Amino acid sequence: EKLPPGTLAGLLRRLGPPCIGSLARFGRLDSPHAEDHASLVQLRDAQQDIVVDLICISAGSQEAPWILSLLQEQLQRCEAAKDWHGLEVAWFAFSGIAEALADEPSLPPVYECVAQSIFRSEALTEDQAATAAVLLRTCGPHFEQSLRAQLVSAVQWLVGKVTQIPDVASEAVQELCGYAGQHLVPHVVEFLKVVEAAAASGSLSASVDASLHGALVGIARHLPADQVVQAFVQICQGTTAMLMEGLDVGQDSGRERLHRCLCRLLRCTLVMEQGGSEPQQ
Image (cartoon, rainbow, N blue to C red):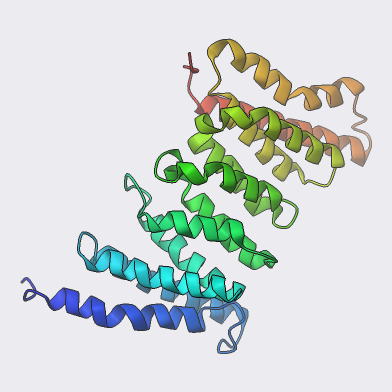
């Protein structure tokens, strides 16, 4: 049976503020209310699910943008107060909503504001930065269209966080470049220099190194057909140079270098293959 007219809207109006307020208060990473970290994680996940459910239930109604506006207000208050733990909770909520809307053609306009708040953030802890990176990665499919204006800033922010949250940031970079690499073609040379410098420092793990090289290929595969092969060769130039120098696989250092080279080549090949066989003309 259908609910009487106005009943659902009334319930959403009553539930929205306390549910969002509860997440903002008890879901903070510095919350004094959780007995231990595991309990806090469980609580945060449950509260995130409730907020996502509210959005899904209200889809297509006037209450959906209203609930999002409550979250946006919470985000803006925390940013103005430089309350980074509070801001992280807001990002966490928006991340869950973005995951639920992954198959939608676009995200609500509020996500422009959400992304910009990430780029303006300061002095984030590893956990806070990781939440932001996961949010950007979750929004990945939408950087091709509705979030296109934020794409370059998102990639720049993530690359800047590779030293702090290497695995999360590098995987997010590759995801964004995979979804919207065609819009990053003008920046591929600049990005290549950054990746080469990071690789030369030797500070990156093999998996992070592979993700960054895979991100480059995610961009380069959108070049005109007569430029793709040369771009792939240039991206792998450091790898081929390392192999040509010779690797002593009898030593741990040699085996580590060989592992790094193979990870790069495998990742780059897979990303290029995922791009299909019809490069841009």
